[in-house]
Image (cartoon, rainbow, N blue to C red):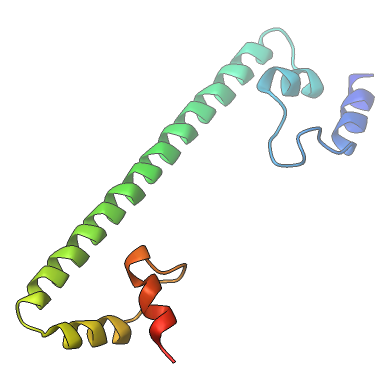
Length: 116
C-alpha cells in the first residue's frame, strides 16, 4: 500500500515549483521509511543541507573578495597610469581596453554618450 502511495506521490508535480525537494521528514514519509530509518535519513539530509549552505556562503565570500581585489587592482593601475599618460591618452586607453560583460561602471556612462 505504501508503494502505491509513494508512486502516486512521486508522479505528481512537486509543490515547490520543481526547484526544491520536499522537506526531509516529508520525503521520509513518502519513501515509507521505518522508525529506525526515518531519523537517520532526516539527519543525513539536514547535514547535507547545512554543508551545502556553508559551501555556497564560502563561494559567495570568495566572489566578493575577488571582486574587491580586482577593483583595487584596477584603481592601482589607473593611479599608476595617471602618472605616465596625459588626460587624453588615459581617456583613449579607457576606450580601447576590453570591457567585462554587463553594464559599464558609473564613471564611464558619460563617455559612452559622447562618442559619435
